[in-house]
Length: 234
Image (cartoon, rainbow, N blue to C red; front, top):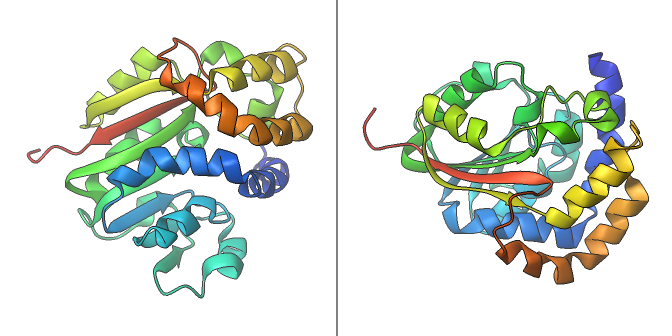
């Protein structure tokens, strides 16, 4: 996958997602109870969730090797935010963070188990990895490829992956079932490589209603949400 092409695809998507207030509030509400005081936001993009975590009172380290300039322009002046423009494997220190946000990042990584081990080492004992990844391998389509997604995930293999990387899995479930149906129709069946911008804006307006469906434990959804804990020992 050409990195420049991937970045060209992702840049407008990151801005579109940043503008989706209802959608982002919905995602962040899942993570907020587990944040703690010290947060690492991995693949922070342009700071959509870095900003929310800082607003919630956390001290946030935003790790972003690709979009660091945009991130610094948005949030670099905030005293509770530190921006590191470097890859995960070069991050110094260990066991420093109460939680790690990793939203729609792991699917870009070739060796995802090694990445999870590195993330685990950055957590304090009992610290939580708050993970969101695209769900269902059969939904992999043109946009996934264009955006540099190596894979989408199924639930059982993701649980095994987290456990092999040394995590205890506290939550693992599908979220956003309506989004999965829309993705199937718009991106997978039509094999489109374009971000469904108009559909996403419509979806964001409907989130206050649709989020009630998320209380149902359905066996499908656009994403998989996980809360994974670093054990006290090991």
